[in-house]
Image 1: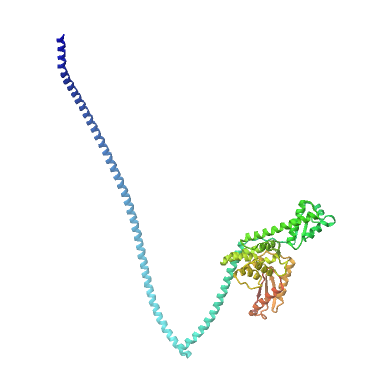
Image 2: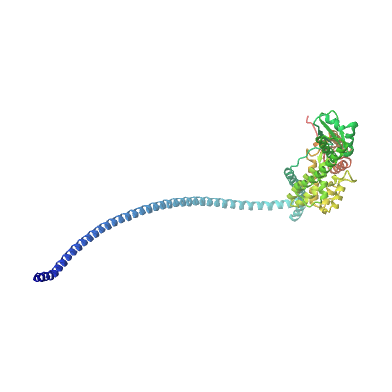
Length: 515
């Protein structure tokens, strides 16, 4: 048994190395076979990569070739276009050179022609000089004067002619300058009028109050007329209650009183309670309302014109002018229009616009009190402006706007012109037919009263009078004096809005007959 075990152990000991050797050889063979397989795969991968690289290379070469061909084609096309443009430029240059050559030839021909003409002129000048010398000698022989004496004589004649022509030219230039100045002034005035659009409403001496029914007339009259007497006594306005349906007429020359009476009467009609105590209460309320209205109208006028810093009392007086009229023209509207026109004219001439507007607005301020105080509206306006510390410029504009004193500034002249424009434009003032016809008749009578006047015609609605004179009795120099005398007499004897143009016409006619 032990022998078997020993044999088995020996066998194992001998078999172990043999087995290890065999195992090692097997592993080596297996490793070699794996290495061979890996190398073969690597070679296949390399071959494949080389094939791909070769294909990529061919594709890249093809793309490069295509790009180079495309670039070459573009370059060839650009070269062709540039060559065509160069050829066109060369043709244009060649045409210009040909034109220049033709012009040069033409100029050369003209120069040659001018040279020939110049030579001919020189020859003619020489001939003329010789003829002139001969003429001078012949003149000296005929006149018995030397050339110096003849020159002195001619110079005297020329000097006299030049003096006469100079005088005529100066007169023409003066006339032209006056025409231009008149034209420019008219342009300024027309521009100012067009830009100033002030509306005027003709005012009368009556107001009409509408009634809800005719029964109200009896209530207004009252028992034994006590109500109507109370209204007339408190307001100073006459109430005319006639057959006019549903209306009462208020008559009075003071527009402020008429307005107080109108407001009070309307309040009484609405209230319905008409008796002396209630009438007195309503009249008092109406007076306060009118005073507030006067102040608001004055402030509105300042705001419309754009003038500030005027004394509050002057503002109230401006508001009162809303209730004053001149030939039917509202005094406040007229003052606003004059202020606007003065400002526009001052702007055209580069003067102080604010000062011009202020002077224009206050130029008729005396009209607000001229029925309450003695004196003309010009004098009263000057006193008011001095009282409320207005500037000397404004005071002078107020006292000179009707020519009572000489204006001391251009703004005063502008106010004078603006006042005439506002008053004289058609539609601004209203006259009755009787006054209108009387003014026309008086104009013609004044004109015909002067010696040498043949006929006279009042035209342009009495704003112009044309006077035909007898040529044998009135000379051109007398016409100036006659026009001035007639103008002065019209100013002294007539009252009229705006201004009147006096035209004196002298005409001489000679008639003969061919038989």
